[in-house]
Length: 305
Image (tube, rainbow, N blue to C red; front, side):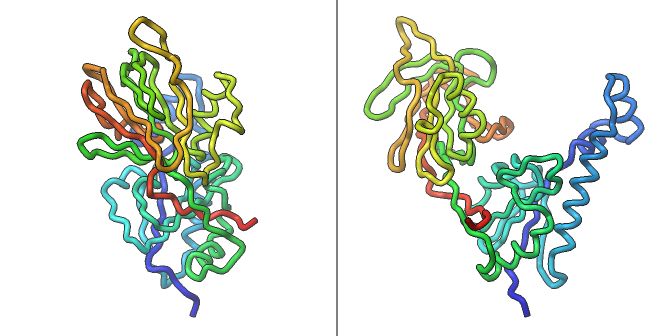
């Protein structure tokens, strides 16, 4: 009898079509709404069909005697993962950081349900690989490997914590200037800026890369690899004045080092991870946060090289 893992948790997210139908109630109303704006519902239907077909292929590959559960991304904060679960994320790459912060050592597998629609950098496996991936998860045998990815941690002085697979943002929740004091490598400076991001190597292909290119920073030299235990931080549009400086605007936080921030924002100061503003943590005047490489990593399955 083939080996089985204790439980498989299949994580999905709503398709664009499902979100539109959720908002407008019926297919007819959604089609009418889009039509009045010069848009067609057909592209959403094609994406939905492709994603659904891929998901069904994954579910059919689960052994009939395998214990499993399904959970939508919106219910992750209410779902209890067991230590020996194997997590199968079926969707676009953004689903992986959504899930990563809820995991603590569980094996994670990303499957791209529709390669014609999604690039698949983190969810890189096609649905047809599901059976082989599950065999690997159970036995350790197969042409795959586990590559732990570095995560970032932001710890507020009262113990509230954020974990991120891509990046942590510190700033103002509107477009007002973010005011704070930054301390790194024994140096301190007061800032007025558009905020600060601290990115892992996984996040270095997104927001951080855009900032680095705009600033003329050597991407290969300045941004870490996804498995490297270090973080790259960038201050966005620092403003020089008699009270604020701009010399501390970019750097790297290695394992064991910290980036410390003290808020000077009377209201509207915020922290959030991986672009999910709904999970933000307040960062009001007098509050401090310490950003560092997290002890926790994402154990992601990748092709064996």
